Structures are given as C-alpha cells and as structure tokens.
Image 1 (cartoon, rainbow, N blue to C red):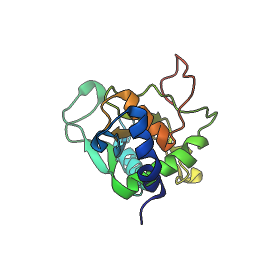
Image 2: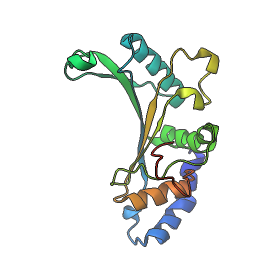
Image 3: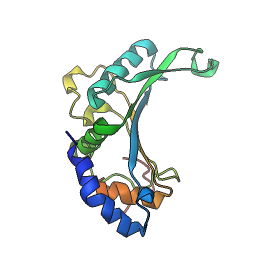
Image 4: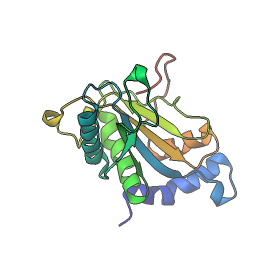
Length: 189
C-alpha cells in the first residue's frame, strides 16, 4: 500500500514543483531521497547504557532498528576510546520514509512547545534540510513515563534538489511547517 504523502507527492506536488521551478525535464524535479535520524551520546557518564537507550528510542520513533556508531579514533580530552560506541543512526527510505515524514509534519512538529514553525534556515547549500531536537518527548511514540534520559536527535531530510530554494520549495509543497518570518537569532526548532 502506497503511503498517503507519497501519493500526494506524485499527484499534486510533482506537477506544482515543475511549474514553480520552471523545469521541463521531469528528472530535474526535486524529490525526497532519504531521511536520516542520528543521535550522539558523547557526554554521558555511562555511555554504553546511553547508546542502548538511544537505540531503543530511535527504534520506537522510526519503526526501524538503528545502527550503532563507533568512535574512529581515541580522543583523551573527550574521554573517548577508539571503537567505543558513541551514538546511533538510522536511514529511512521508501514507504517508511514517507510515513515518518507524514507523522513528523502532522503530529510531531505541532507537539513542540510554543511551536511557531520550523526555521527555514537550516539548509546545507545543496537542498538538504536538517532539524535538531533537544529531547525525545515531542515524538508521540515515546511514552513520557518510560524516558530514562534526555536524548537529542538530528533529523536530516536529503533531497535530490541542487539548490536550497528548490529543496525549500519541495518541503514546503509537502507541508513542512516552516516559519514565515524567521528570527535572526534562532537557528533550529
């Protein structure tokens, strides 16, 4: 079964983007390629348990088991040894990606306290967008009484767009709740 947002992209957004961007070749119309959810447990005193908690939380949020990230080299100042587990990440593609984006736009983003929209400034110059969260309580899949520790997340929306404007147009057409008048001192939601 095709996710609702993917059907909406094919039926309405694709043709609207083609007109808005003035693109004649349908292969040049930007599309969502993948969504990457990452977390890092660098400061935790019990880093091994923190990574296990992060893996469990990301699995609940995304519906897919994340892979564990390991330190590539030892850094004494950060008290990190080579090969030690320091975080987790998951890459969503296909139906899971579209369902996660739908839940993010319609449920998670409005759950943010004092929500006025997501900052439209966090583009990387190549049409990809990143947003960070300081804790997992904004996600409805997480049970608040089951939270053991606060875990921050970064969500990266990777698009096939060449420019930030094309990526912004794609995400806006899909329903991403961008803030209309971004404040100069705020960088993330």
